[in-house]
Image 1 (cartoon, rainbow, N blue to C red):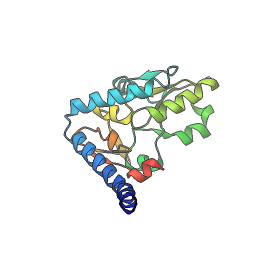
Image 2 (image 1 turned 30 degrees about the vertical axis):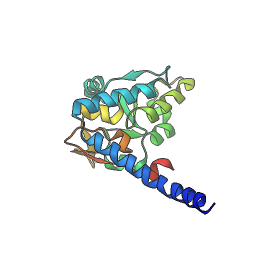
Image 3 (image 1 turned 135 degrees about the vertical axis):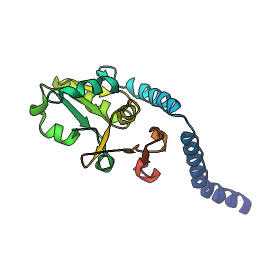
Length: 188
């Protein structure tokens, strides 16, 4: 009986260490990927999320880069958390909060939402369908954007630093410094 209790106690305390080991191993493997392999992984992740939003329109980062010449008609909407936006944002992007507070200002413009990969921006775009507002989801999010050569800014300056949310999404090009939430923050 005593041995059985010891086994249960040991098993419970080993679980956190096993999770840490698993995360460490997966992080090391992501760091070993080439930029091309990272782009492929972004595509895979985006496609997993995209199936949840079959009715929303999407747009490639390359097409958005082309459209940047007409910024008067284009609105980029960042759906990430404040901590993520504090690291870097796409040029002239507004927050989802600003968009939602001033929807009427943006109704007749070309709207593009983004996040890290495309899930949170997909949620925003999907939520606007019933209101008759078309928001395009940026394929691959901010990660797809930087892999396509798009710039990210901090305090109006181009930088090579991006918040990638967590280790699973640590797929920025090699020249980029990445910032991630802790596992605890990702869970809660």
